[in-house]
Image 1 (cartoon, rainbow, N blue to C red):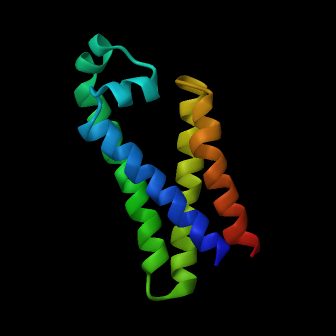
Image 2: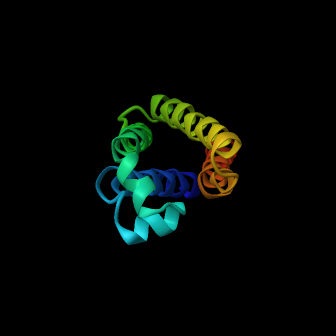
Length: 118
């Protein structure tokens, strides 16, 4: 049960990131969250929306794994998408901001460990 809760939290986090990147990229709150300026946000709006779409796909995959009718198959789907989140966080941490590893990678790592061992 706790693994399911953590997987759901990771999915919710990625839905929130998707919303910020796709629909709120130039808002003061989102610019503060990502440490961007108005000029940067305006010039990267379409790139951020594309990135947000990918975060939405990660969330959709995690939700799919949670609701899949065959629990065994659902578990494998969750493992795959948690691994995708972790890889994306590691890449983002290496190329953009190290805080991504903690903010996105750590919850996914915890969820993966819970799913695998509980």
